[in-house]
Length: 108
Image 1 (tube, helix red, strand yellow):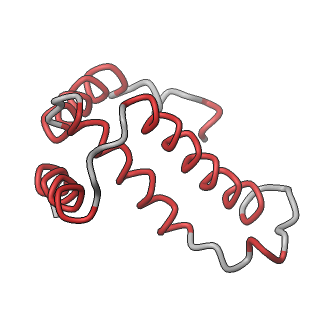
Image 2 (cartoon, rainbow, N blue to C red):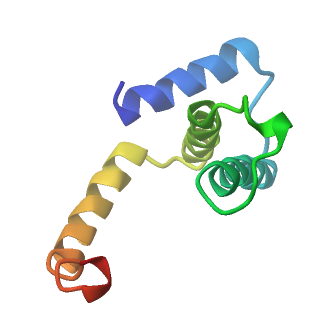
């Protein structure tokens, strides 16, 4: 599924299963919460924190999908074509960072 279709799928889901989009501030708070859940899994599973028993069955993919869902909601409700925005961002990063990381001694 491309980003444009993902935005449509989220909008369809909101229309069919939700009452309406939460307002932008509420969705921003939700996004922060979802990113925090991803951070918790990463810190405990891949970082130095010990993983709690209650976290061992957490699905990182599901939590990342929650982040994407809320980002798509925010894009929809603010009129952003996220696919176009992402393409532009890749172009900018490619021009700006083409040689930057290859010359980074910390990455060798």
